Length: 249
Length: 278
Ligand SMILES: Nc1ncnc2c1ncn2[C@@H]1O[C@H](COP(=O)(O)OP(=O)(O)OP(=O)(O)O)[C@@H](O)[C@H]1O
Ligand SMILES: [Mg+2]
Image 1 (tube, rainbow over the protein chains, first blue to last red):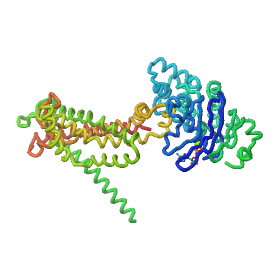
Image 2 (cartoon, helix red, strand yellow):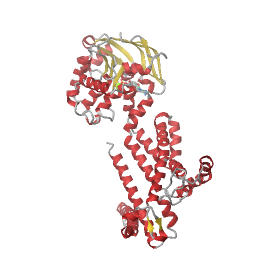
Image 3 (cartoon, rainbow over the protein chains, first blue to last red):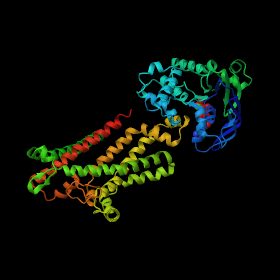
């Protein structure tokens, strides 16, 4: 188990966003989180790299272990945690810097300044997302000149450059067209050999296509967590069945 | 019908505003330029300004303007940027809501007040602690540096605030600290606005007259240190126009035309820089 949450509750002020979540996520699998809008998928994902720290008035109870370490303990180094647990956002957020500087951003933060090392990292990261051959002569151009799909790939490459273990992806394909989505999905299947991926998606077909295990959330609760096959063919909770058969959400 | 009249009226007002600007510009150039041709560009940009002997060289004043402007930027940029960054990224909403209007209010204080504070506090302070007459490049730079703060702070602040939050999140998610995010991401992302704020501040510093006259000493020579007295282009115009006649008067208009060109160039650069953002 690389990620384990036990009795996890999260409050936005007086509103409870997550209710008593228990789940275990296995290494080198793709775990999908599905559920209707506003059920707390993003909130849950943002617990794992403590992005909720940035929001005022958030209170969290219960434990989250990553690699056996309690991420909310005062001993946990937030910066190291975020290096280990990377995040891809819903809308590609390539920085308004050159393609090279985007990828080198993380390594530079981690005090890598040697030009040759940086070049190697950029090459390796872009290769991992199949962008290197396309972009190798354009590294000095602004990242914002790329298409949305390439920007999202670039954001993934930017993460890989800091050598994370876990990739959190919050609806990474929702701003992409079907063809681009297919390409990013292929990429995820490839990345899962080296990384653990947790992906939030609105799109049940997507979860069915790429996830090994799926969690279904509703109103802040994790209703069911099971293998993808089980969830989509024989869910054990009636509410899961209703959702995947399109009754609501 | 009423709308039509209002529209026409506004059109007339707008055109008369633009028209009077054009008229002023035309007047300045028409008064000044012939003199430059009469004495030659070489003489106009020479060292010797001695109207009674018919010498109208503005080089020492250009150097004076340049020195106080650079000095103002040396004072204004670090404080202005630090202030903008603090307000935009490190302070609470409350602090932002109170401090920003106060800083913008600084822009509305008449420049004679700045000059007065300079004479009463700054000039004696420099004289006793650093030596020299006190009326100096240093005093002018500090006063001008403070006067351009509102320009630098508010435009830089606006451009930092305009950087989308998704960039900040992306940076934090890579493990960057707040400070790293500011230095490596937000400042580059807001660069065009920051550069524009500096250029506009520079324009303000070059054009400022009253406060500078009061603290600069206005001696007609090239300063050898920042404690020496200095005279700028604008000071010269303001000090001498009252009694100047003939060629002397034309030479002052030529100074004005020269300033006009410099400031127009700065403004065009500022507009170009901000326009390129998209
Ligand atoms: N910063 C916040 N302050 C207060 N409430 C919030 C905040 N962020 C989210 N919420 C609430 O928490 C609940 C869960 O939000 P969350 O963004 O996690 O949902 P989601 O499942 O990701 O939805 P979507 O599919 O629309 O992205 C929602 O009811 C939302 O209104
Ligand atoms: Mg969401």
